[in-house]
Image 1 (tube, rainbow, N blue to C red):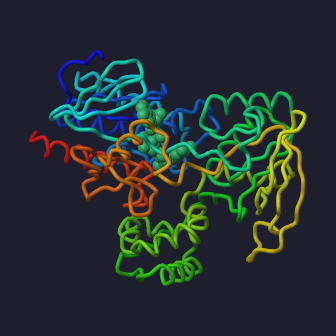
Image 2: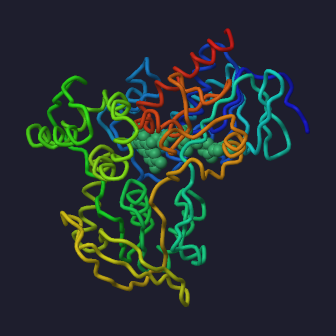
Length: 444
Ligand SMILES: Cc1cc2nc3c(=O)[nH]c(=O)nc-3n(C[C@H](O)[C@H](O)[C@H](O)COP(=O)(O)OP(=O)(O)OC[C@H]3O[C@@H](n4cnc5c(N)ncnc54)[C@H](O)[C@@H]3O)c2cc1C
């Protein structure tokens, strides 16, 4: 196997926002890195590699700086702090940051998948799919959200009728195809991934009906102006139920947007204060409600969805899929409806059999890190060099995001510890902290 020569200070696996900013932050400190991304999306990642103008950021430009010490950096480039910019503009901004880091000579980007990793004395040898090796004294895991498991009820359905991973070229091609041939589309999941899929279908000129289904039928709310109503951490009671009641009361007083956003500076502390039992309870019961109020969408996107619902082009269904099969080129699905999105309690399910041209799994990323199929994560987990967190949703890390001996993890991989660590405003600070931690540990 061919070696890449001397070890860099760090090898970073994953070139999305997390990995790119880790490389840029290391370079600022004079530390070298090899940034590995096998998807052709280095400097963009999953979220910002979209080429579609309809895919907008879900927060205004003023909150999207990549640098924690220059908070208006992105807003200045866009020219309007309040705009919900196209995500591809943010991708171009991030690519510019990567190019600047590469220009220092301290960052080398490798467009290959990492397929294995070994300890080599003081260094990590990361094996790449083309047979070469990247050597680093530290290993940074920035692999991002893991692709979803196949849905059990869709296992026997042909790939051309049901797409399991909506972030692939196959998914994009399927959207274009269904827009051209017509027919109805079923989307499983009603969160942000569903929103993207609906926007893509509409932009491609799809004229058929879209049915989006999830257990509760809740969809992300839209942003709108509000009067901030800040609170201190000590104003928020302890315990999930007490917090939930407090939040509901506060929402009636100041509006849910102000109430939810006031928790933003404290969300990591509140998460850690809950403890494991209540964190699990949150994930089971409160998360769907929290997600749709906390992770809101651009106002114009919200308006578009409402219009599509009003004219019957988009139907949001609370219910579940009971059976699914392919039959003579169609996707035949038996669903059980729960009675409607506003139904306070589950009603007896009404069964219905519907036919679609295409189905898309938009239920979100893999929820169980122990089932990851990523070669590097799998190997490190199997060897015990890293472990899953207490909830099994990410990797176990210490308070400097160390996941193992000279191994750091970043971004969504660390959500068990921090919960709110999936968006740019959180990850940018973490990338700076990880670079500082690596520099300290390497004595640089
Ligand atoms: C559709 C979408 C829209 C979003 N919109 C916003 C927004 O508006 N504002 C906001 O703040 N946040 C937003 N987010 C959240 C957030 O910005 C992202 O989740 C964040 O960018 C995570 O970046 P990441 O680098 O950790 O992961 P990813 O973007 O998933 O990048 C990981 C990269 O690592 C590569 N990789 C993984 N394993 C390997 C391997 N073994 N070898 C080589 N390469 C590997 C993957 O191919 C991928 O390119 C959005 C997220 C999504 C999915």
